[in-house]
Length: 420
Ligand code: NIG
Ligand code: FE
Image (cartoon, rainbow, N blue to C red; front, top):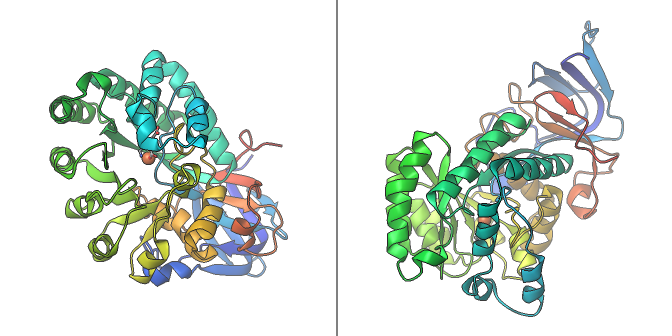
């Protein structure tokens, strides 16, 4: 079968951007480029051309033609924050949460991240790769085309490296575009309790150099929050990472006004993520920065937390992305269609804003928005074709079911991961 594709009779081609903007800030997030009754050409894995109306006549004998009558075409979702490599599941804690225990209480009892860390220790690189590949197939079927994956369940040098090697395997095996983030400072392991600064030293002096030596990470992350790592510790780690060429993308202000947002902006983080506890000072810091404000509605929903003030951020001109936070503790789902709906329902984002947040702004938060995130000539052809739907707003509105008919990654139709 040919590697070139023609998509014709597209009801709406959404996410078109001829200017190739790297991100959308504030009210510009409400603007989503669209072409009604469109065609698109995909050649050698790239979006080569598109337009309105009937396909211009030419010799297309080398092309596979997909008739998209009644269907829409979107750029694939760019999920910029996940912990998709993990072992086992944590539904016992889920029961504890239902009974009223907080995330921090569960963590203090040795549950939470430390629970996943014990399980990860016992799993082999092969087992972790296999289970993660299954999850990647699952998220592909829901429309994800690019994904960031963090370490952070290792919490010792060998296991952090093991996790990052798994992510390296995934990069080679999966059709998704994948970015990896080193999150050694995700939690303080039990053996370092009361000696937290020594663990920070281990991250800085041993882990970062080894991670960089093996070129295992694209970015560096710290969980800068109440009960986890302080601003001071975060800044020490980020400085060390930056020296080694790792740009920060950090967990901040999920549990308190932790100062994490300001620390992230100070170190020119690519993104600061979670942001439930964001006030005027935090918004002011974000406003004139190059840092993406990444909101994770799945975690806020699952933990029944207060909501990040997305509307105030957008009004102030901040760029907002949405991501899944796929992980076994606080967000056991990587379904970006659900994230899109939750962005609208919980954060009062307009569908156009939420689509931009899940595509181009997510791509920016992974440093790949020059290649992905919009329908732009020359970008990688990661797109999905929907089932027949009446409007783009229907995507977040009709929530909880898979509205995707066909996934195309790198210009190739993905057959295996789509459930029939
Ligand atoms: O992003 N907030 C910190 N880390 C993860 C949770 C990871 C876990 O509970 O396993 C998060 O929600
Ligand atoms: Fe996270």
